[in-house]
Image 1 (tube, rainbow, N blue to C red):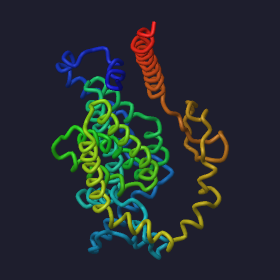
Image 2: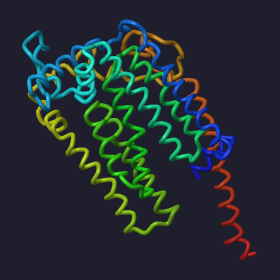
Image 3: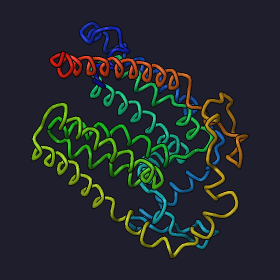
Image 4: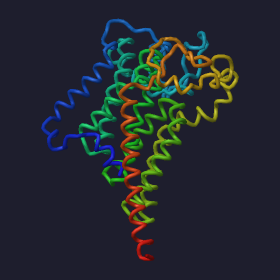
Length: 352
């Protein structure tokens, strides 16, 4: 039902658009370029987290000194050093350090790790949309919606939150991998292990926030297999195992970071400051109306609804959700009506 519902938004057939595949690719590439234009300008744009270049240099310095995996930053902590990469997602900075080693340009390395997120978010969104909806036009819409989402651009050009961008980038690839596993596609477990490893090694908070939604999505997909496709209970558990063991493998691949970050956090002063003053997460919960305000700001998040930073969901995204809800409710009540009529004919008419 979901496939028919979402596909109904796309009015043109797959066959017609097979000939225009190149045009759709151009549209997606244009969206990536549009989202990336400031990265190609000379110099660096101002962002809240302006220390990305220093982190790349520190990562490069540690690797050059023979450290792997890198845990310690020699010069942070006012010159005393600090275990930055023990607790802060290291993957983007490994990639940045490699680019810095190849080019010798710190600014180029910083912009590259931002640009990578735009490219792979668009690519992953397209593949996920195509796998779900079986339609390249719909897949293009999914790709553009993810790539040009205002919150992504805010993370990029206001907050400079490269780790969160990498975490978001991994999400469509994770969902795509789960669907590949349920379709019994070859090497799907590799996709899931790698995409989960990217998430685990990039951003702790995105991992924690996405985990319950990921489990819910997996449960819904498995229920779809069981009740719609009528698979046997044994096959249900086979699919579950096929999802669990690549997840365990991803945890193993990321264990050098995940386990120390969790079990050794008590040796830091994070708990002392994380609930203090501005960093207290309880003052940063949003009002619903903030998701619909179109103003764009470069300040920070504060107590109350008048933050100087934007949390707008996006015109296209809101339009897409509205259309989806309308079509979903229409089809749901249509299916409910048919079920009631059939039940009436089956059970009540014979009594008459």
